[in-house]
Image (cartoon, rainbow, N blue to C red):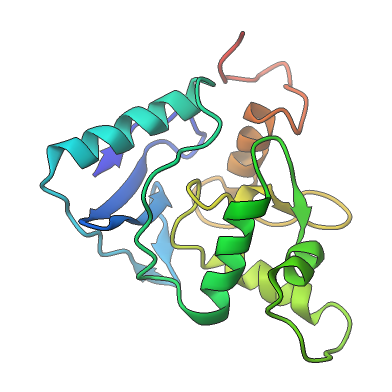
Length: 178
């Protein structure tokens, strides 16, 4: 299903199964370099819930989407890091790639400096549930970090962090006002 958003990238797509939201993407995005095959939900209650929660988030009336998640597209260490992010980094907060690597408990073996942070960066880039699992809240130790894609990546990250009050609004801010 496609849901309109005020993001610079336009609408988002969501794949919903009987277990919950299994996939989300920004306009034109692919998952791990492949076009996303979205599960189509026929349960109108579930699709209405997703649409209303996303709308409430983008209008500033909801700080957590609190939607059921189907973790089918994330496994092993990737799932552990995503679950840690979801549980520990709420609205208006950020965490660095390195901090998330340490918090997740996934990287227990000694590695060269920076490897866990870079690995977490790759995991965020392959997040099958952006917005629901807020990878926009993961930043570099020296700035915003990445948020790639052909869909206005860093502008989307900046927009979301402004919505959540992490960054101050600019004169061209198009988000909700109090």
